[in-house]
Amino acid sequence: MPQITPSEGYLKFDCHLTKEANQIPASLYTPLNHWRRELWLKRLIGSYPDGIGYGNISIRIPGSNQFYISGTATGGLPELDQTHYPLVERCDPALNTLWCRGRLRASAESMSHAAVYEANPDIGAVVHIHNRQLWERYLDVLPTTNRKVEYGTPEMAAEISRIMTNPAVLDRKIFVMGGHEEGIVAFGKTVEEAALIILNLE
Image (cartoon, rainbow, N blue to C red):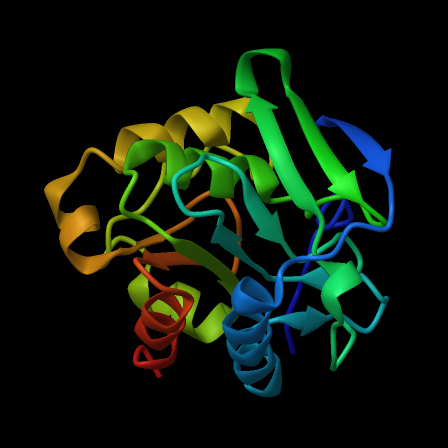
């Protein structure tokens, strides 16, 4: 049974939401939601018995550092519509602040996604999943972030920026979150590539 600490699943940064009925364009929504569904069916995205969601997925707007990401508290939903993906417009890890637009607040892992996108303009999608078995199997086998650094913090954003300079990370397009039990992050030019990297671990 997955385990989770009480602090998991909550925003640890200031999230400025411009609440409006914007929707992710169909050209981005269709592949993103398809692969989100595949990961949900494998229970790599979902919710724990106490209702706290885990895992998230995002896609970059081509030619920008803005991205759509599954909204907070959506992990337990089997199907998402276009309004479940808020737009992250800007992140400032130094201020521990994020600006997003939509009906929902962006995922608690949005800062981590932003750090991945910032590292390489060719990255088009990021997947963050939870699975204890995979996490324990690949901890320190795949590139792994510092175990002392917690998720959703400016320190984690800095740690991801650091690990993204590792040639092994850029080659394999995946890393384990050492300080975030069960957390694994993959990325790729497309959301299909990022999702298949995770699914091929199994």
